[in-house]
Length: 104
Image (tube, rainbow, N blue to C red; front, side):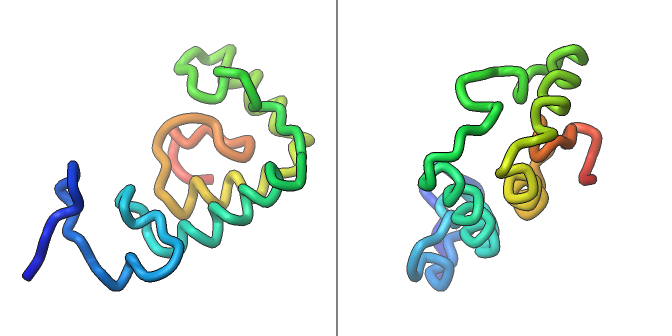
């Protein structure tokens, strides 16, 4: 019997619910590894340039360029980009790349 995830059109796969998972958000199992990699920076007290700023989600070209520039020295840049690629992000600046233009 197939059930749907509450509030979603995605089918529920009980196997994906074992252990820590982001399946409830419709994200692939590989997301957990990239999510934990990204979260390790925040748990370690790292400060990222995107903290408290909204340029990363803006559709304005000037904001996007600012966000991409500020990503340059971010310690979480690779983890951020990996997370976005794993989850097929299609909006925002992730790891110094504008994902509205497609994957890097």
